[in-house]
Amino acid sequence: MRREKKRKRRSRPDWVTDIAKERIKILLERALSTPDRKERYLELARKIGMRYNVRVPKSYKRRVCKKCSGTKFRIRVFSKGKYMLYTCLKCEEKYRFPYGTKK
Image 1 (cartoon, helix red, strand yellow):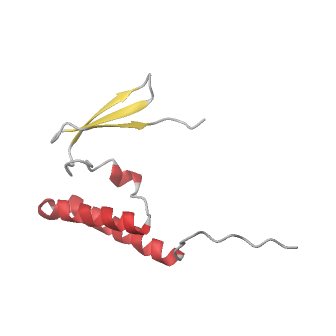
Image 2 (cartoon, one colour):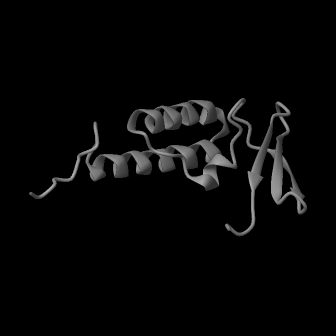
């Protein structure tokens, strides 16, 4: 007897998630280029990501503060712990990102 592949519970077609990724990318690019509408564009990008279960690309995630939507950071590199510490200059929120090779 041949087993059938189980389908995910609420899987969406690939074209839907591709469009969502594209929209998020466009909104994030516009947020970084137009400071007056930045917060609205970031809010819309996050909502699309949550609705369609799509991740925000790493390159944009590290350029915008989650708490205050600030775009200016102080970056410190710690070679002993192999991480970078991003500090938002607007709200003083801190984020740690690992770097280096994967084991």
